[in-house]
Image (cartoon, rainbow, N blue to C red; front, side):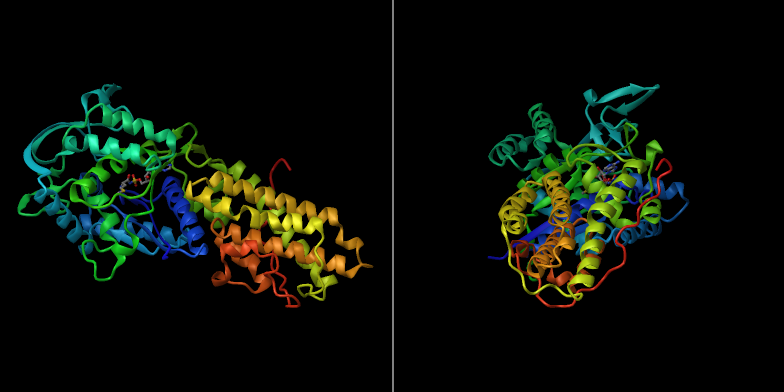
Length: 513
Ligand code: MSP
């Protein structure tokens, strides 16, 4: 059976340059994409930019630029960032592309054909910053201004002719769907807020705007542009060329395995998106995962709050892999997390430099001196060796199923423990005292090298560049990394030369050290 995996990040607003919150969504998606790749899945990993709507139009006006030129520029910074973050994305979609426009207009026509769209008049609150409509009970007064309670973004009253989507009609089918598919909205803690919102009653949704033009036109009515969220969400289909089926992308990868998003855009993904799809008779994605926020102090990091931590500055100072490792390890996945340079430095020094880097250096230096720089060939495993080696085989099924539940916390803990045990094994076995028993010495070295290999495979989705650097010890490259092989205790070819490698992670001198 074909194993296919389709993962998406949110498409980012190119209204300002990317920040750590965006980098976080992308790095997490890349982690899953790389994990599935080494587990022999065909992976489609999509990211991109969400370029229509009033928010972008106004940002361009403010910058005194033509809207598309403005988008070109900032979208490029996101595309560049995907390279800088070493994302393994298959595709980068821009909603201003023709392929996207075609799919959006097609979907609109389908919704209309199925009787889910009608023309009426909208009057209510709208936040340009969130590109969202709010009910009266979702608004509060803050320092004399009306704002949305959840995001604190200013709202304005709008009244205009608009097309509506019959969202109310899908209230019951959505609730039934959540019930029948308990993992559809994850983590579980986010599910209740969605269900109670739907239960409180869904009103039909305004899905077009008439007072500005920066968007995709409603088919057969040039006066209206399609609501930016209906436009944006459709990117997940347009990247697969829906409804075109000749190239089989849609058939192969839809329904998406997981839409990874931040918790602030859960309503759009867990309510509106499935309702649009139900109405268009398209299968629903398998999972919507709403991760937490990267906080700066106690607040969400965002441009409008002016508390941005620039991922580029951090990468320049510490390197990419330390940042990737840190975000994946220290922000407990699913929850909000504070990021601090001090904790990042601790991670580099203790986990990466001491526990991983040092282990690689120690065992290769020892093998160079005592095993002629080769992978030992006369090896006879004893209980201690098999105990530590077999842990990987015994946990393989568990690792896979934890990843299918997005339990990154388990995964990273497994690696941290494995590194600790590997170092302890090498210390306790004292191969330097076994020079009179070469089989024992060789076996300890072989076992430790095998563990370095297995851990490097597991670290690949988190710190791809450093893992590949470590795997040069064995002349292994990307194509050799197969998750399945962590169950093999004799993967390394005996008697082959090993390479010594440069230091993997430099320790950070801390002021109070
Ligand atoms: N354009 C929409 C998404 C459309 S998807 C069809 C959007 N864009 S955004 O640029 O504002 O945000 C993109 C993602 O970044 C969202 O998932 C959001 O939750 C995430 N983050 C923005 N700030 C964040 C943090 N401070 N921390 C973590 N993620 C945050 O919404």
